[in-house]
Amino acid sequence: MRENNGYRFETDLIHKGIPDFQGVGSLVPPIYQTSTFVFKDAEQGEARFSGKEAGYIYSRLANPTVRVFENMLATLEKGEAALAFASGMAAVSAVLTTLTKTGDHILCSQGIYGCTFGLLQSFKDKYQIDHSFSSLESKDEVLENIRENTACIFIETPINPTMRLVDLEMVAEAAGEHGIPVVVDNTFASPYLQKPLLHGCDVVVHSATKYIGGHGDVLGGIAVGRRDFIEKMAKTVQKDMGGILSPFDAWLLIRGLKTLAVRMDRHSENAEKLASFLAAHPKIEQVFYPGDMRNPDWLIMKKQMEKPGGLISFSLKGTKETAQQFMNNLRLIKIAVSLGDPETLIQHPATMTHAVVPREERYKMGISDTLMRLSAGLEAWEDLRDDIRQALEKI
Ligand SMILES: *Cc1c(COP(=O)(O)O)cnc(C)c1O
Image (cartoon, rainbow, N blue to C red):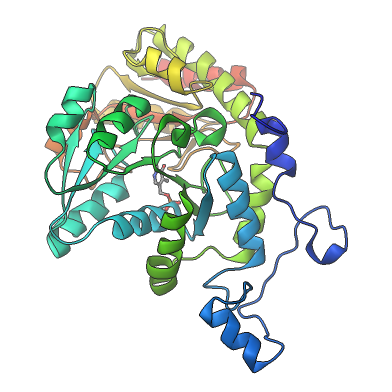
C-alpha cells in the first residue's frame, strides 16, 4: 500500500500528524484537558474571535488533542479535513443536518445502522426531510431513485448487518451527474480496508467507537471531507449543537488508531476462517461474508476493499428462539452489540440493533429472525471455532 509521496499507510498510522507540542519531545501527544484557552490580552481575544488570528478559544470550538486525532483521520482517509464528535451518531446527525433542509430527500442504501434509521424517521416526522432506500445495484437504479429534491446519498458498505456491498465508484459517478454529495458510513471497513474518498465519494463518517478505537473503551465519531464542508459544519452544527469529542477520548482514539493495521489483518483473518467453518456446518442456513467467492458482491469487494474485514453475519436453521439458545450456549464469545473490539462479540439484529426497524422493513433489508452478526475478535481462531461448534451441537 505505497502512498503517492511519503510513507505507506501502516507507517502514517503511527507517525503522521503527531506534532511535538511545546518542543518537549513527548512521544505521545499530551491530553489538553482544558475547557478554555487564555488570551495574552484583549486584542488577541478580539483577533481570535474575528478569525484574524488562528488559535484556540474554547474546547467546544477546537482542542489541540482532538485536533491531532482529526488530522490523523484526514490523512488516513485521504481527505482535506476532519471533524471529531462525541459518538458515531453525533457525526452522522451533524453531517446529515449540515447537508439537508426541510423539503429535502435523502437516498439511502438498502440497509443502514438502526439509529441512523431512527434519526431519518425523526427528520421525516419533525422536519419533513424524506428518505428512501434502494439497493443501488446499478447506475440506472441510482439515477432512477434520485429525486428532484435529493440532497445527498447516504451509503453503508459493507451494509449492517447483511454484509452486502455497494459499488462506491458507480454511485459517485451517478450522483456526480446531478451534483449530489455522497456520504459513506465507513465504520465496518475502517480506512485501512476502504477509502471512499478515493472512489469519488464526498464525505466519510465513522463510528470511531468500533475499529478506530479498537479496544471497546471509548465512544467517538469522525467526519472527513473537503475543507469548506468540514469548516462549515464546525462553525454551525457542531459549534451550536455541541456534540464534541473530549480531549481524553481523543487521546484514547489516537492510541487505538496506531495499531489499526495489525488489528484489521487479524480481525479479517479470523473472520475468513470462521466464515468458511460456518458455511460448511449443517445447522447453518446461510453465511453473509464479502470474502466468500459465492457472495454476489465479491467482485465489488475486490475492487474497493483491501480485505473483506472482520464482520460476518449468518442465519441458523430454526426460529428466533433457536438463535437465542445458540447465543446462550456460547462460553467464550460475548453477547454484546458494538464491534471491532479485541473480544469476539455476537448480537441478534432483529431483537437488538435493528429492533426499532418495523418487521416488514427489516425483512426487506434481509434481516431474518435467526440472523446473527459476529464481530471476529483477536483471539486464536481455533478457540472461537470450538466455542461456536459446541454451542451449535447443543441446539
Ligand atoms: C456503531 C455504529 C454507528 C453509531 O456509532 P456510535 O459511536 O455508537 O454513536 C453508526 N454506524 C455504524 C455502521 C455503526 O456500526
